[in-house]
Length: 297
Image 1 (tube, rainbow, N blue to C red):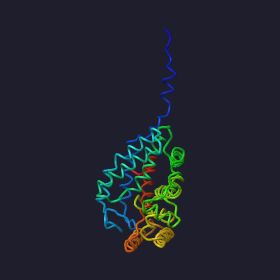
Image 2: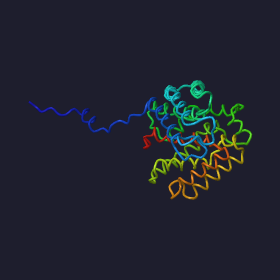
Image 3: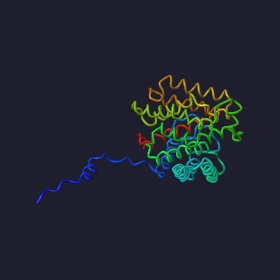
Image 4: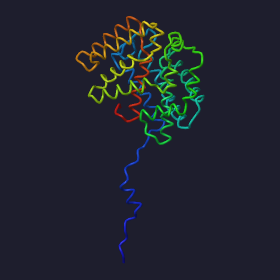
């Protein structure tokens, strides 16, 4: 009686590396909600709402943002699923409009997250499409997927006459609008915010310090239409110069860095400046690291 040999298929299965499980819509959407909480919880944060204070805003506080976050949590899951289904831009837009209505109902009509509904919504859709295709959710893949699936529709959106304050400010001052940022695949996010946040963590900065530096890095270069709307071009340029000076002096990681950021916060509050566009980019960068399993948990 002969000896039976092990089945080759079983041997191959035993030595194969475990297959990477890509995140589905639930995890992608949950990462977006957590990333918005990351942004809200950060302080000091010039002119912006945090758990410490309301920054330059009289009509909202951290509780307003938390109500909004709770109302939006299913939207990010929904739009990630739509992305995985290859939905057209019109379907994503309808989901965003419905999410804005839920936000308004939760906040009494206050705009806490309109920019995030647009930016993080598109990114979640791109993540859903990439995961469905079996691609790892790396920054370059997310950006390419967004432009491949919805780039033409976003370019067409840029040609529409703006009606919201940020878009009107962009047109008035010749700035790059949020729609144009999206049509280009969010260059400030992928070329500035994500490298700044990931690089700070690699250098050994604490999460708070890395996020502060990432926020200031975005403020230094972004055509932030929220700043232009509230403070005109003088306000935008003042904010950019303050951010560049902060980073040139060593950022949040230097001795006294967080105190310097707090002083800039007080200055922005006195001037009624609020870099809401930069806040959206910071939240998006936190999301990119979360969905890419790069370490922000």
